[in-house]
Image (cartoon, rainbow, N blue to C red; front, top):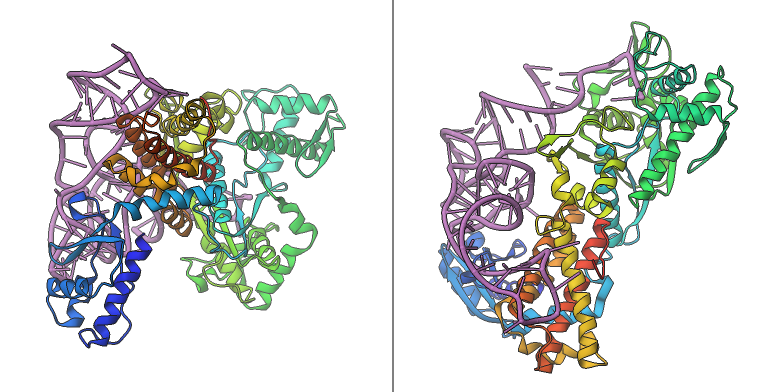
Length: 561
RNA sequence: GCGCCCGUAGCUCAGCUGGAUAGAGUACCUGACUACGAAUCAGGGGGUCGCACGUUCGAAUCGUGCCGGGCGCGCCA
């Protein structure tokens, strides 16, 4: 509908060019927006104001000229010139309702596109170190990252989900030492407890499992504990596998699945790290100072150079990161998106600098990053900081246990990643109008219920039966619900372009509200069969849109609640 | 001190590739179940869009400078 209006305006502008009233040079594509105020019609354009200067005509006069040259059509019923030169379009009810037929025809495909042309995109997210259960922050990353993947899939991209984990560094040594301490019967309060040891009670579980010689199957490996209390290497191997399995279970409970788990250690085994370092040295982007090797990241926009190889030997964390991203590039991913916590934002400059230093033709802005800000968990008006299992932080599992998967997913994706998030446990638990998740799901379940009712009322019945009678839907609630449905594709397209799934969450809230208003204002199934069938068509179209939108967020669309 | 993010109703947040009278939920106050699910709906009050200057026909939105909050600024990862 909007596209049709855009086309009409373009034709009018062309006519003005031919007449010489507008210069021939290319003009901007018409910007047509939905109006906020119904008095301003349904759609509006600022075209006349934008072009007034070039035409050398007052905006309102130009607006009049554009209107006079609009081709004859059945979409626009009236045009007004308003304010400084807006053109307001009133759209015919029939063309507004045409969206119902489109949605019913496309069903689950409504809102999808082929924009990605099947091109491959890799999305790396969560990437938690295997040193403890996933916390709320990882949960936010999982929810947003997965929703971004779903948005891209919806837009025709071939998406590869990847989880990168550090299975070798200092923090993993600390993990092994902590498990060893538990094996030796120490408590975190003990003097001999390792500095920087992990204090959560789960470490005790790892120690017990190790002593019991348990077998652990993580996503990518199987490890059998020897039970040898002095073999630190074996303890480390087992602890990493045990925690990987733990995280896998958290992710499964959240319905987030990865195509590949990438081990940092593999970069050392394959000499990828060494090759990366050699390449940077060869390209003369490094220098030795104070017995350390430095990368000239200042050549690529950093505010100071960074150490690559420490005085004591060993590489700093971002070096394998550069090697890892080179590996992504070599795997053929021309588009890579990294979703991570904003506390890691300083790595962006370093990784990109390292990649530029390799001089392999990797574009400057590659890879893309989506950073999410911190999450604060509130309950009973107070911040929740502790978890029984993890000790010093709230885990993703805690959230799922408290409020369920759907509410957790919704709340973690409903806000812009750039904003800090307050997760209100009491709100997410409430089964009432306070809770937007149930509000949306309730609309869906209500429609399912109506459809069953229709069967008992009309017997054999199909959603398309109402299409010939759509002209019966003239009430404002019916019209504005149809209008909302027609906005879905552009909402999803915008969310995909900006990698902002929260736009979908907010949109669904609005659609559900439109539906509930419609439902309360009109009896859907009544004695007039044609009206009933038309309303059922509209309701079923709404059902498709809600289901499609919830699928992008990874939230279920229940038939009964 | 430097970098990134944020500052919009009592609270939680949308709106930010500039557009007309700034929105939603919640909280508070009124109403609506002898109609298909009241996990719902209808209505009301509630705002210096942090402050200032600038660009513009037009600024919550763009620019600059302040103020306030968060996160980073390691030869930790």
